[in-house]
Length: 484
Image (cartoon, rainbow, N blue to C red):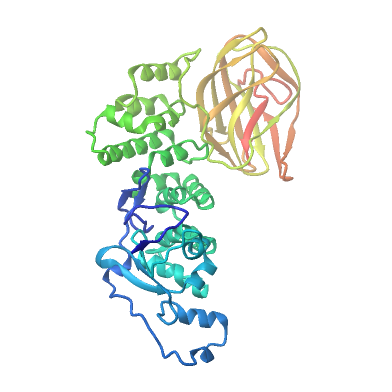
C-alpha cells in the first residue's frame, strides 16, 4: 500500500492536541503538545452507504447537494484512505476529482509527476474524525469541528493545504480562548505557525497573567514559548510571582527530562529564560525571600543584585530593569517648565508637586534634572501619593547617572501607578547628590495630544508644607512619563 504524502505542519503519531485536555507529549522538535483521545475510539466503524445508483442525480437540485451526496459514499469512488492506526483505523472512500479540486496536496498526490497509482492510501498520522471533517468541508463546505477535534482538524487542514478550513479552526479556538488555556493554545499556535492566534493568546496572557500562569497548561509549555512570554513588557504581574511560576516550570521540565530536582538542574533547564526575569524590579525583601535563597542564581549574581538594591553607584547587573508596564500603546510625557536654570540644592527634603488629570492614565516614571558639571550619580526615592489620604500608591528607591547637561533623566517606578481623573495626587522625589539644574516659568496646565487626537490635560498646584522649594513656577520634577 502507498502512504499518502502532504505538506504543511508535521506532527508525530498520536500527538495531535485536544485543546480541552491537559495531558502532554512532545513532538520531534521537543515542543510540548497535548495528547488527545478522539471520540471515534468508542464509535463503531463508519457505516458506508450506497444508495441505488439509477437517476439519483435527479433528486439533487444543486452541485453542492450532488457533491455532498458523494461524501463517504462508495458510489463513483476511485480511492480509499486507511486513516489512523491499528484497531482505530477507518477505511474511507473518496473521489480523486473532488479532493484534487479542493487541495493542491491531493492534486499533486493524484495528478503530479510522482502521483500514486494505489487505490488504497494509508494515513497513519491523521485522526479519522479530523480527516472526515476535512472531507466534509471539501465535499459540502460544511464545518464540523468541536473541542475534541479542532486541533487535529487544524493539523489536517494544514497538512493538505486547505486554508479556508484552517481559518475556521482558528476562529473556533479564538472564541474559546481563556486565561486557563491560553498557554496551551499559544504552544499549539506556535507549533502550527498561526501568528494571529499566537498574538491573541499573548494578549490574553498580558491581561490575565496571574490566572494564566496558575493554570495547569503553563508548566507544559516548551522553553521557547516560555522565553517568548518572559520577553514581554506587558505582563500584568509582580516579578516575584513570575519568578515563582518559572521555578514551577523548571520543576516540571526536570521531571520531563528525568533529571534530579536540584538547583543546578533547574538552572540548566531554564537556560536563557533565567536571564529574562527582571530581578531589579523586585523589592529587596522579595528578592531576599525568594530568588536569593533558591540556589538557582550564582553567588556572585546574588551579591551584585543585593548591591544593586542598596548602594549607589549601582553595579552593573545582567538583568533587564525596564518596568513591565502592563500597558498598550505609546509612551507619553509632558514637561511643565518652559526654561531651565541652575542651581538647585538638596538637603534630604522631598521635592513635591501636586497634580490632577482629566482622564485615566498610568504613570510609569518621572523625568528629573541632574548635575551641572559632568557625569554625576544621584540616589533618589520617588513616590506618588493620593494627596487627600496621604496614601502611597507607588514608589521606588533607585539611582541615576547624569551627564552635566540640562536634559532630564528618567527614573521609573517598578510598576505603573493608576491615576484617576479629578483626584489630587502628589509627585515626590527625594534626591541625594550635588546641586542640579532646575526648571522655571512653570505652567499650571499642560495638555498632551496623542497621534490619534486623544488629549490628556495635567493641572498643577504647589504642595503645601516643606517641599524643598518646588512649586508650580520653578523647581524639580519637570516631567511625568505615562501611558493613556
